[in-house]
Image (tube, rainbow, N blue to C red; front, side, top):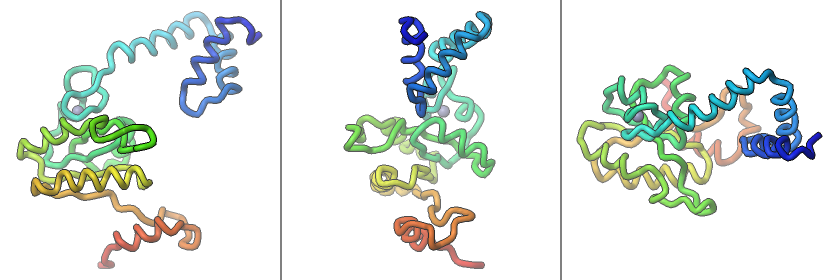
Length: 197
Ligand SMILES: [Zn+2]
């Protein structure tokens, strides 16, 4: 069956999704063939709708349908949380532990992927910080080598302006025995230790 060129083209489309290999893409394509014409239509029009309607917020770089995203429209805060991708905002929002605003870098510094400071959404962050309304920047990037390098770069860039820079605490994950934690995690946990009150 997969020698029909239109089926091959659909399989090829699905392989472009993260975590989808050829076999899974093939299963998805066969499922689409079995779908009603109406369901398949919803699928394709939903894809085109996000392409036509979703833009980036001019303030923070989050997904938006207008000039500003929903968060920048509603919240006025003196705290900005810097994340790598729009999907990270959804993760933090689900915790219900933060009600400030965000700034999306659209990546992290990565010499391997040729991402330098100019390829990140940094200029608009610095413009926001120059306004004087922001008192604290929370850096919420992944605890890996690239995330660390980006966090250090950001801290060095922002600190001279007198704005407080903080980072998400990293350490031993809940439910993980100390003997199974790696050295980097234990080192970070020790440096970020908190006083027992
Ligand atoms: Zn925004």
